[in-house]
Image: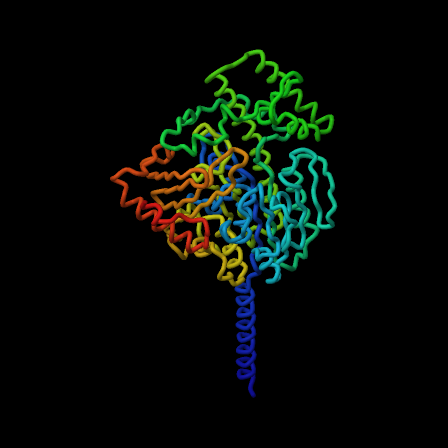
Length: 526
């Protein structure tokens, strides 16, 4: 072999080696690690109070970061607008009639049933839950969990641990939950495995006790009353029968903090138990802020519309202060993921267990199938490989989260899950048409706020609701012409065909989801 031949062989060998190394590098690049999932859920946080949805009231820069770097769902809804039932729908991917957790008053969640954390565990994921559980039974399907009893307390809260011990932690609950979540991600998990952590906050639940560092925020802001604040509920007897009016039902001490020794209210003792958890410094800061407001309030002796407006302003400010702590802590989680180079491989989801009324129809709270409480915010920061950005207009529901997380993790979605995976939307592979209608069912009556039992169907334009049990009343709304749902169209001749079509669709959904409580078309014709 001459030198020329030897050189040629060496050259070809080198080229082959280079090509082989390039192929290996390409293969390694294609072999991506499974996605992590960070799911942040708050309580009663309505989309009106997030600046990525509505800029009228407050700024939420950290929540906006999620939407800006991912997607914002503009038609996101719940299946049952109540804390426990909504959480059960989310974790099972099934409606209340299938997961059997109907209400907060009578139900205990069957923890032996299938949930998406259990399925992720079987697929090799580490799973964790920190914060509010609110399903009465203890969590299952989590490698690590630490939850607050019931609703939890904003100040110096108790936690139930996996050892079934109850421990008290000092500080403000929203901060503590975030501390625990970051601590688990940093120190308590196996960093060689993918993970899914559920960060469940009490905030922004009633009675809106803000962190002492935020007490003086927003006091210079004045908010216009919603146009339908003094709604007379004409043609809507169920709406007229509720007990969630800011004017009539918002407790002066429990909700509005106007505690004075000579004043009493139905919920005074409960409020005193909440602020009684504060240490001396916390309570001193609280009293320094509220003392002058209390004195001025009782001195002014407001009545009528002046008092109604005062209650609304205090409600809005207290709510916003609680949101401020939440937004700050969402920023802490995002910063942790960024600083540890995890954002490219982590899906970050932010939502609430339902929406909430900020004075619309004169209300606070939720429960109704009307838009403000059926709607819920849903934003996602997407990792590499999920290319969709901006708004997604498809109608989605909280039963869709479970199949989405499972498909993202490469886990087969069980056939009995009733939700639909959002992954094709997140990849940009599907149009915004996911389903043509949504089903809703609220069961908790009689109970707090006295909202009647009802079920209904919502399409992209219309909503049909049937209130039942101790009432038999239908409501129909054209959401395009009447987005605030003030005019009940049910029974009008010109909407007869729309009504018939919606009833057919309603019955189809009730049969599809196996809801035993359904209307009878034959009886309806009588």
